[in-house]
Length: 392
Image 1 (tube, rainbow, N blue to C red):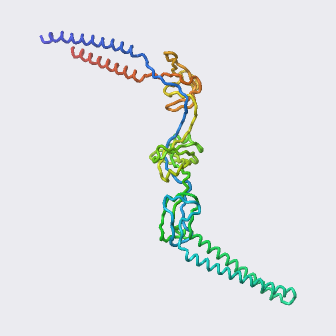
Image 2 (image 1 turned 60 degrees about the vertical axis):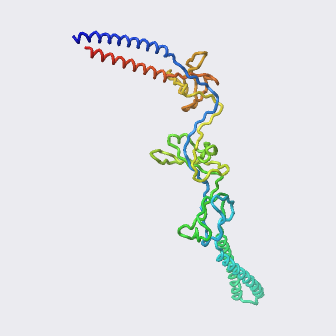
Image 3 (image 1 turned 60 degrees about the horizontal axis):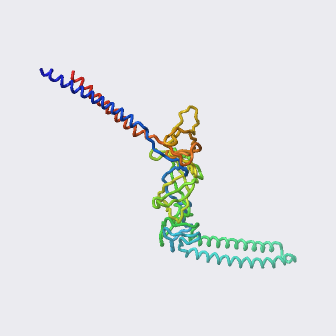
């Protein structure tokens, strides 16, 4: 009795379900037909600059960094520089205690004066003896002795002159002067400190200061192996320091390492960019961002890369593409010839004019809507199938 009552109820439910699904399918098809009209996003062909760049991080380094040491040993009496000071070639950097050196110069100068006097006396004696020898009033043996005295006096004079020269050199070595125009990067000692000679000391001597010309600097950077084939010596580059994000420093590539290095499983090649350090803003060790200009073409026709599609015709040239060119109210297929391209823009060599309008089909939204409707229809059909199986 219960079964006979339930059967008409299930029958009514089934009929209603089938009718509802049919209506949904019809309406869905009607909506799909209405919404399947492809919409286009309009983009314009414009004239501009086409640039291809390679970017990397780098560190500013001085080009000519000099570690200054003294040839002499001794106590520093004068050290008039501080870190950050600008010095010119020949400026005083440090002066050591010169008491011993000055005494040695005075002593060797006195020795030279004596040697000059001895030589002058020996020369007069030789002249007298030689006249006697020419008059046969002096034996040859006596003449040889006076010649020996003259030669000895000349040798003593040379020795005295050499000693004086060395003493003056040691005196000058106790004064350290800047070899170049530059900035004091580091100061390693202070006044009163005793330093070791950089020449005679086994350890290499004591460093006094580090000085560098910072009018131009090197930017040391690493270029990924994917991009290294695009760069070469002489390419222009722009450096932007983190300390001056709105200031651009112009430079160029001067060196590319022939050997790669591995950093965190990434293969990099060291590249050196020489950069003009305007106003000395770049400091040694500053972090910078480098942008290397691979291509820089001005006044060329550019179209958004998304508007270009490969030609479907077999054997077509690799630099040919298809676009949808707006003519009136319609978008018609049109063949163009392209040049260089990146992910954003493509150079148009022929086939389009400036201000041409291209269409980009908005297919992603249409596809998403169709997928959603199809999913709903499939879900409804599965629901009906389960009801029928249960009614049996």
